[in-house]
Length: 73
Image (tube, rainbow, N blue to C red; front, side, top):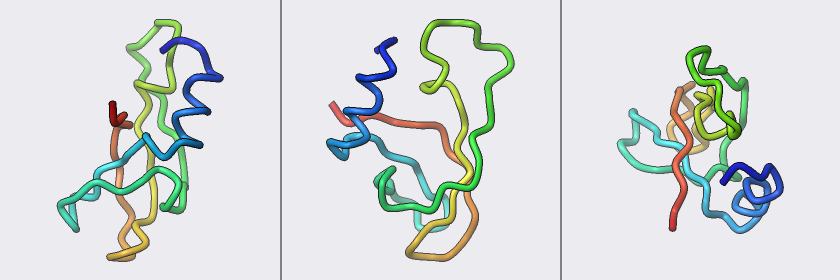
């Protein structure tokens, strides 16, 4: 999925997830408070958003977490 529009559509459809290690469960990308996107400096391909790490606040346990992006098929 190298098209940024496809990534945005997947977000809008609720198919993008982050993992909260405190709750030990997946959280919908749209339901968390996003704090930062941490680039993967070793990735040089056409779809960098899939290789970033997201820093977010979990709405359930109120902790700050980091997770790579996962997509539900």
